[in-house]
Each structure stands twice: as C-alpha cells, then as structure tokens.
Amino acid sequence: MTPERFIALVEAYGADRRRWPETDRASAEAFATAHPEVAGPALAEADDLDALLHRSPTPQVSIALRDRVIAAAGAAPRAGRRWANRLGLAFGAGWAAAAAAGVVAGVVLTGHLTADVQADAVLYQASLLGMDDTEVLG
Image 1 (tube, rainbow, N blue to C red):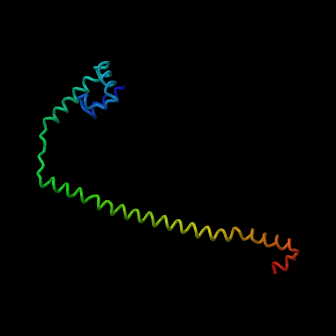
Image 2: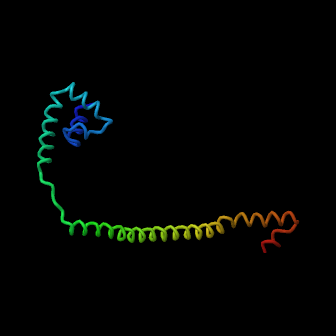
C-alpha cells in the first residue's frame, strides 16, 4: 500500500476502519502500523471530520415533502421514456433510410458494373453460335 492510496482511503471512508473496503482493510491497517508518521495525522484529521459530521443535526422531513418527492419520482421515468422512445424512433428512421439508400445504390451500381460482363457474355454466345458480331451488335 502506498501513502497516496492510504490517504485516499482515509479521505473517502473516514477514520473508522469498519467502513474501509474489506479488500484494502488489512493492507491499510498494516500500513498504519508501519508508517505512523503518515497514518497518524491523516487518521486524526479524518476522526475530527467524522466527529463533526456525527454532531450535525439530522434533518426532519415532513410527510408532505416526502409524498411530493415520491410522486415526482414516479412521474419522472415516464417523461424519460417518452424522450427515449422518440430517440429510438429517430435512430430507427435513420437506419431505415440508410438501408434503403444502400439497396438503391447497390441496384444502380450493379447495372453499371455488370454492363461490360453482359456485353462479353452476348459476344461469347454469338461466337459459339457462329454468328457475326455485326449481326449481334447491329
């Protein structure tokens, strides 16, 4: 454990080691024991902040405010879903337009790109039948 990681843990979770993540708890406690010059001031500052936060009064919320918040929370997803549905329709319309443009481009390009192949095929068939090119091509 590095000093920076230890200080980050203390700043994020406070001085109470029970709030630290279990994966880091043992290494942080070992670091605190091995490096009291770094851990001591950081833990003391976090302990003071924890005490200050515990002394602050707990706000009392009225039943009317609680009911308004719950009602607003129930209505919020519907508005979000309408926006998401509109966004989904826009993406779907864009996808459909792109697919249609791809089909049209494919049909148009296929006709142009295969014209030479078709002409060669006509000439080849004419040569097999013993016809003159002027009879086939006019």
